[in-house]
Length: 114
Image (cartoon, rainbow, N blue to C red; front, side, top):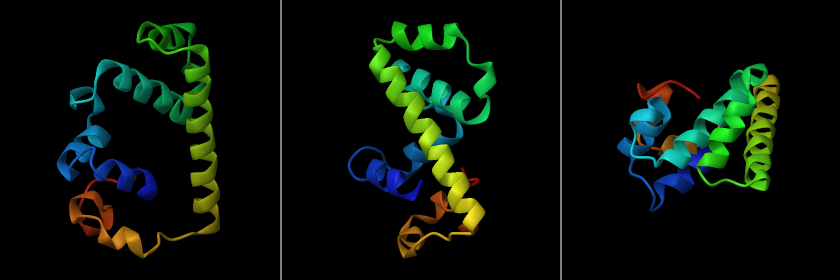
């Protein structure tokens, strides 16, 4: 999460915008395709068995190809696997985590961990 968030903070979003995307993606400044991608990826991670053909069709309506959809599903599944592996091993964030604005760090009173 730290690596991806850092990339997004470098020239794409400010801390407030990024926090809005994390907390309330449907109300954020993301375009409709990105919102659909986030919904789908969230289902892959949290509710895999609830994914329907309608979820995939929604991505296609947003202009995504079958290859794009495969990439999204794979990236979400691999990221989930990697996060669970790190959690199981008790891995702690590196020092770059402490350099994030406090609003982005749950241990500093910011948003919830994701």
